[in-house]
Amino acid sequence: MSARVRLPVVTPALVIAIDGPAGSGKSSVSQEVASRLGLAYLDTGAMYRAATWAVLDRGIDPDDTEAVVALMAGDAAPAIESGTDPAQPFIRVDGVDVAKAIRGELVTSAVSAVSAVGAVRQSMVDLQREHAHASSGIVVEGRDIGSVVLPQADIKVFLTADPSVRAQRRAAEVNVDDPGSVSATEDALRARDAKDTTRAISPLAPAEGSIEIDTTNLTFDDVVDAVIALVRDAPEGR
Image 1 (tube, helix red, strand yellow):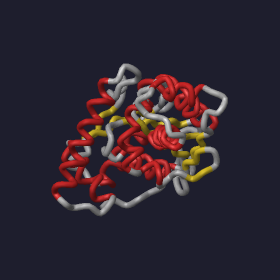
Image 2 (cartoon, rainbow, N blue to C red):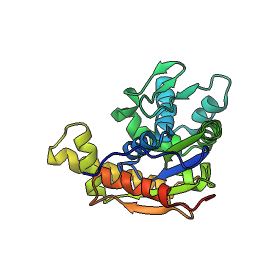
Image 3 (cartoon, rainbow, N blue to C red):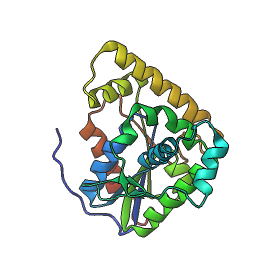
Image 4 (cartoon, rainbow, N blue to C red):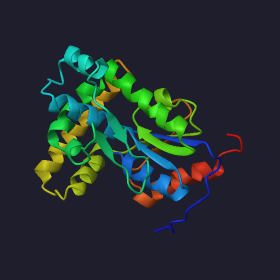
């Protein structure tokens, strides 16, 4: 295992965009990269999950696009707050901590439908850009960061992995090793991949100029080191 060395930030306004499908390791890798480089960290997936939680909490059918739009664009739109300290990130909706709730099955099964709604994406993109512009350096992870949210990011990375490996990782996160459950997780990931890559607005795809890293056969530290190497090797002035 490689030594964990905290490197100096290359410039005060360094922006690293890390995209990829569900289960590719974006969140954990991004958080660790931000921690080692002394940068802020933004989990945009948590923001979409928080919006989905708000939709469900209000009894709205996530497939009812008009109702979702009315909520997100109306005067009673939920206030979504994201903590950007990689050591203590948080996600709140109207002041309520929803970090645990947004990882549940209900939100997971509905997030693709909610995040495909244009009003939801626009609201989240505006918030994400605000965080990036207010920071002195940040790692932002999601599905359309390098292509839509921050296309001028200094470093753009697209993480990917074989769906079976992603399923095993997801199952390990919740201490599940039953073959049937792992298989069901893989099926769910494949279904989400299909939805995310074919949606009309901001489909999941590597951004122009991004570096693709296949994490299938890499350890966590291997991936973190690879991203940090991109920062270290970036030309001055980028």
